[in-house]
Every structure is written in structure tokens, then in C-alpha cells.
Image (cartoon, rainbow, N blue to C red; front, side):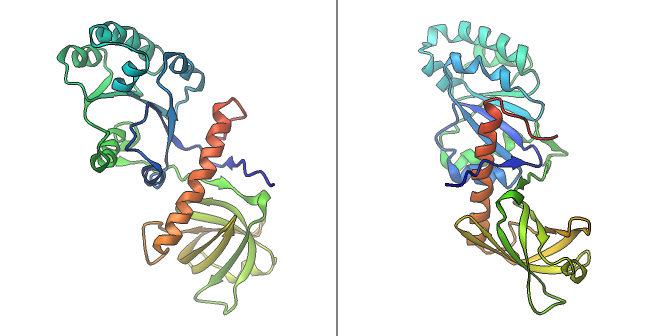
Length: 281
């Protein structure tokens, strides 16, 4: 069976979430991915937490679920303050300015302890599925935004070696589609290598196109996309689309595309986490 371990062409923004709330499921993971943010789940046992410094990277932030960390490590309420003092030393040593602690507990001593050390600390229930997504997006903004807008990093996965088939039609030009293979893919665009060397002449920047992408078990149809890159040396096109536009992709196509990118990223991040070569900046 063919391996699908994937290379990333752009490093994602990663949230390493220690004891991720159960309300954050696959649907929420995919919604974050649409903002180019990958959620990575970690256990809250101190033996595991102490190893996090080995994957510390500038593009990563760390969310700590204090309630579950205390529970996992069998820390009772009487010892929570002392445990937190030691925990703060660890955070400040490895993750200063890029960590956030959240809790359901309303405890002035705990909140003052974390905030006095400059650690972002919020008292909010993230086990409520209805509120988890909106609250978490608000939590993310200070780490990955300018002027309250989440920055885009345009994560792309390299698919060229798999030679997935693609058909592309210039909707304002040729009447028959051109064939090619997938070069790369993201939630907002695709790179395509055309099979016919002459086909590149059928396209100009800003041309509207439609695409059929045959990737693994999926047929993903992009009803409208636009040519934003032309590389004649590689006989390749770059196509941009908006995954949230139903004029460009149907709901099913958008969901399937998101799932594909999510699972490719999941495989790639696991590869990074165990110490294999890192993806390029």
C-alpha cells in the first residue's frame, strides 16, 4: 500500500494543546485549518509536558488546560498553588510570551500568580461545544494576528510525487480541458503541472478556470478558480480559490478538501514531532 507521508511546502502555525478540551473535535480542527492553524494534541502528564521543549519552535504556541493537567497529575486543590508555581517556572523557561493557560477554576490566588508572571491566563469553560470554537479563535488572535485579524500562512502540501490526476478548463478560452498532475494543494489554492507542453499557452493571469482533482478516493471539483501563477519552465499553473465560497466549491467539495489537507498535515506534523527533517520556513 502506498505511503502518504507528505512534505509541507509551508510550515503551518501550530497550537500545541496540552489536554485539549473534548469539545474540540475533528470539525473544529478543520475549521482552524481554514485559518492555516493546525491543532496538535498532547497529554498532560508532567513526564510528557517536560518533553515539549524539544519541539519548541517559533511558529508554535502552547495552550495549557490547567484543570486537566492538575487532574492528570493527581494534584489536589490544597497543592494546586505550589504545583502552579513550579509549572510557571517551566513555562517561563521554554515558552515565554507564547503560552496561554486556561481553566474553569475561579481562584484569585491562581490567576494573580500566573498573571503576575506575564503568562496569559483565562477563566473560561471550553468543554461547552457551542462556545469552544468562538472562544478559542479569540484566544488565538493575540498570537497569530495583526490588527485583530488572523494572519494567513498559505500552508501547502507537496503532492507531485503521487502524480494525482487533474483536469483544468479555461472557462473563457478552450472548449476541452487540459490534463495534468497535482503539484501542491492548500485550502485556498492548487499547483498544477500540465501534461502537454503547449497547453500553458492557453492560460493568462486572472483567467477563470474550473478544475477536477482526483486525489486518493476523492473527486474534488472547483467550479471557479483564478490563475495567479504561471511558470513556463515547469509548465505549471497556480490556481487560487476561496474554500468558503459556494460559487467556487460546493459544500461537499470544501469539506472533502479540508479533510484531505487536515489528514496530510496530521501525518506531516507527526513526522516533524518525532525528530525527522523539518519543513522549510
